[in-house]
Image (cartoon, rainbow, N blue to C red; front, side, top):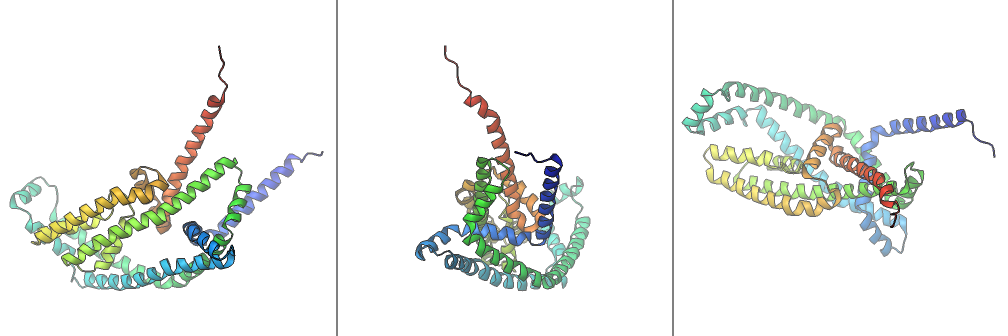
Length: 360
């Protein structure tokens, strides 16, 4: 049997690598649509199996029903909330621009409410220069106003591309749901890794996708809803905007929505609304702690199985590097990192464990 020359093998390998790199580069503008189509396909897999049983194994109508379920449960409510959020964000921007909401003035009120002894102690030890802090806040408000205005313009200009990405995601979702088993088998057969390694990585990807999308988002929505409801109870304006911010922050373990409701409670107590501030702090603190300690491990911990501080750092890093997609990509990279090293460690130990013991 004739052997293939080394030059031919190297040339073919170069063509394979080049074609793969060019294809990945071609798909990069739509990687978010592809990623979320794959994630949603994993999430609705159980529902799709139910539709398959109901429709006697007909894949196409079952996949269509699964996609329709995603549209009804995710996209339609999200579009309604996004519309309301845009209106409230615009109102908050106008209030900030017209100084109806003045953070610098709020700082003065909080500073005036602090006991004289504490104010003197802070001033004498040069911990905080209130005048410099006010100037910094005013500059920050101006920058935020420009960011909001620029962001609104970019959203308007990017509507067409957003629509293209959503339609592409739904189109891919249909085929991922219908042909998911065949796609996974193709990936396994084409993978250069050992079969057990490939199975392990695919299993981890599925677990992280489910736990992050279902678990983390459910936990974040619960914490955001509780905190937003308390904002409404104590009379803080722009409730929907703050609820959205706290929902997003609640995706981060440990800190979460406290970054918003904590300062809000301090502000209420410092400006004379002591009862409202205490109620806000106690209810949000107890409720969010309960959700973090009971609901988050139940929904998220089983899938990721990483310490909270690793998930926190990975999520923040993912958001900084990939934007919203980083909510999934960050924990996924962290999980694959620890999984790869775990497999590597097991491979090093395996020969020693499988070595036959000599008897005396």
